[in-house]
Image 1 (cartoon, rainbow, N blue to C red):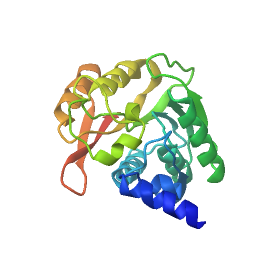
Image 2 (cartoon, one colour):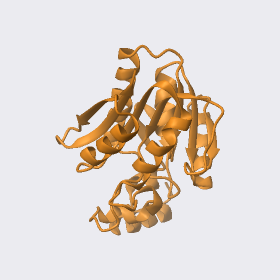
Image 3 (cartoon, helix red, strand yellow):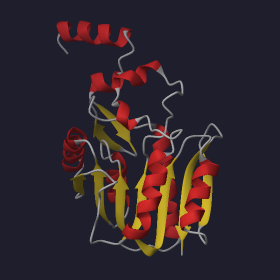
Length: 227
């Protein structure tokens, strides 16, 4: 890196600018994922969302599932799933710039994913999906966050209704999008499990709901299993 760019990078770092944006990519589940200010920086916690979902796909014997990812961002989740199991994936995001990054990442990682720029609120599909996975915005607007996140797209971090808005919206859409046998997989905020579980049971009263913890022992992943 030329000296001028090094000095510019150091100045940015001194303000708390994310080093991942300066480098330009991150490792996610063994895949190199391009990142810039158009997309949220993938966190290592989200790798466990992928790992757990792959476990449940095997456990419940899903073969060639049709997967929908809501809020794909950089495309890291869909890319990791596509490279780890036989499946077809539609991945949606409201951000055109995020979709452009995701398409670039899919191409660089030799994965075929159907990216769609659309709001989940208006999304419809002729497909009936076996799996829905999402790491949606879930931070309440009045919640304190790391100062460095100010450089990331704020609509990928914050959500109204105490951070529950997108979970409720996605779950309300599920009956029209999902096959009768399905798995719905969420990354969640540490205090949101009971609220999301109650909403899920109001729609799928017979569902098996599993909450898994992250490495810090916080509730972080919620799986809704409909057999």
